[in-house]
Image (tube, rainbow, N blue to C red; front, side):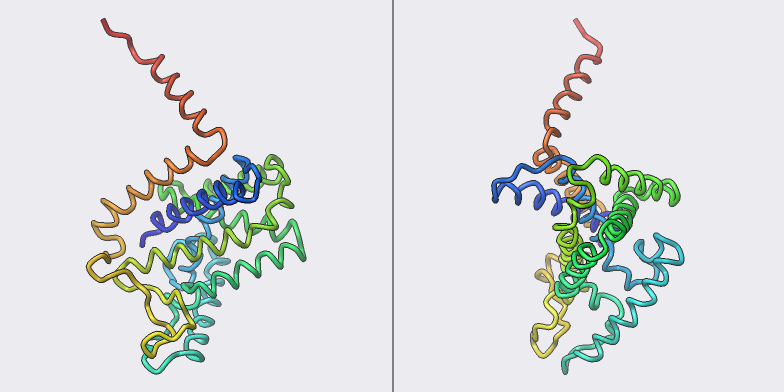
Length: 268
């Protein structure tokens, strides 16, 4: 899938989880927390493609993300070689370790452990990286430096304006990262190639079995089905979900609508 589809699906899942999960335990989510969780999930939904040399994640932070990709690709290939089943083929450097549920959970746990150990620097760094990726994924028209400035401003806003600040994100930051990565793999699973989402579960003699939807339902990444149907539906669904779950969003939308109606020229 294209970066915009990955980011939008990550945002949608983040909105759903942050909007509905707290109510199950009797908590009232705040707008800032819901939006921050969704933003992190949207950005993390681009992270798995660090194993591709020309992806948005690899090019987003210049030499830093390039070096990260140079580390991720051989690591993924090494794990693939060490664990490959008798019928597994390929090198495992792309759509490998970062495209598995186990890899997503591992990184999410690592983020939470690092956040608990080193606190604010780790949280701010994770927020900045994920928000910058989310902005780039959701709007390809935003050039590099301004989008990074926006991400820095949003990271500061979380620190200063969201209840609990960065300390309040420690408990769920890793979960948002893991969910974003998993939804990326689910998105790739409905394209032509599939994704090894269930590694290391053996399936038909393969530990890196490419999970996918039924063949007739798959589509080519970046093709007409994605551009004309999948991406627009994801965008509409995400906006509708945001209005529904973000506290105060519905009231704001209705207020904007009323203001627009008042500004329309009267006829008759």
